[in-house]
Length: 127
Image (cartoon, rainbow, N blue to C red; front, side):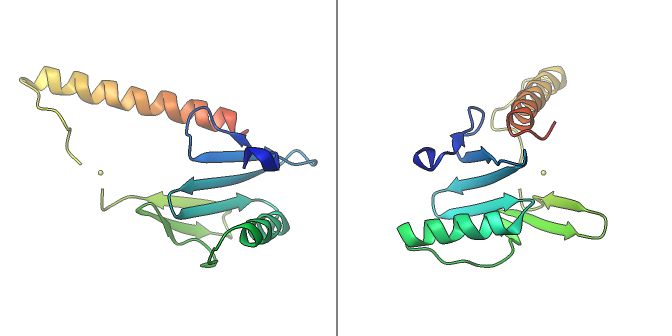
């Protein structure tokens, strides 16, 4: 994707993006054999999809309903997109010896996610 003029996110190696001439972005999320292309302009999505299809054996499954275990719901009238991961909300992977320690662990994990998300959103031009 870098050879096609896309930048690879420094916050998430599975995310590629390109700023278009009108200042908007096109995003490509790629993880093993799952891929999601997103842009405001559907013609950009179609162009990238056609380009990748000419280079790789791909199947277009239409509008995304699910990716990597996340359910995607759209409210086009309100202009909103919702992601849910009800199959996942897991327990900590390490055991805490006290309630206080469990709270520190949870706070640390939450802050790591917040730092990652803030950086990714900023890098992708969404902030």
